[in-house]
Amino acid sequence: MALVRESLAYATRFLARFGLAGRWRPASEWWVPAASLAGWGWLAVGGNDHGFAALCAGGGPIGRLVGEWRAGILASQLAGWLLMSLAMTLAMMLPLTIDALRYVSLRSFPWRRARALGGWLIGYLVPWIAAASIASLALMTVVGPTARPWTAAAAFLVAAVWQMTPVKGWALRACHRTRPLKPSGVSADASCLLFGARVSAACMVSCGPMMFAAMATAWPTVALAGVFVVALRERYVWRPPTRATALALAAAGGFLALQAIAS
Image (cartoon, rainbow, N blue to C red; front, side, top):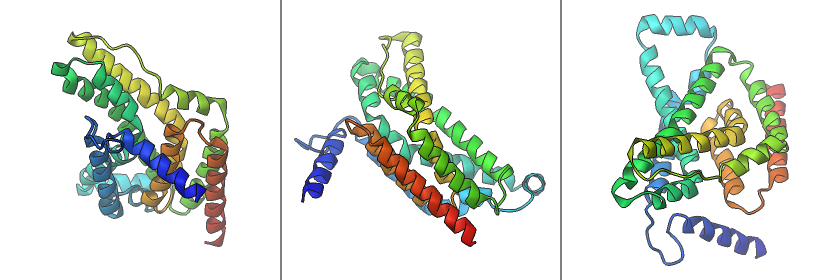
């Protein structure tokens, strides 16, 4: 019963950040869970055709890229690849930015609030999409299909070790830091853009190893869902359970290593 009460209290606190608990008054960030659900839907539906696992499959990656470029199908694959990167970022990272989005909204004049949020989102999403695209390209061109299980196992073990480093703790705290925003003009747009990029960089340092490990698996959508739960708990609890998270990631790496040995 204690576990159930703790889970309900945690869910209530999390929903309160969206204005969906307490007085049940919709907050200005109502679109965040909607965008996240849309991203998860795209990952679930399109992951089998344009997902990270599909991009990483096949032998002779360089020759495959050249052949597909000549055949005229590489452009469509790259489009699906970028869409998957966008969907992954919306699904996983956007719910982790509620505090920053609310800060930008409250610190901006009403007449330029949408513009400020748009600038922040551009600064936040573009680096994540670029990083996800580079990681996907690295998996597709460097790691072959036979080495991918070992790569995923090693990546999870590295992510487990990363959880215990001081840099991880610094990055997790930096995800919550704010910065002054200019009131109007081009300087206000630049400050919102830089604020979003700053939070994005901190989030990549904090969650990047876990997300890369999930992308390297043969079932990235399921693995990304597990990493999302870990990242959500890290972001919104008073004392993030880094040791428990490290043990969970190490267990996942060990399981993947045993699976690679068996195959």
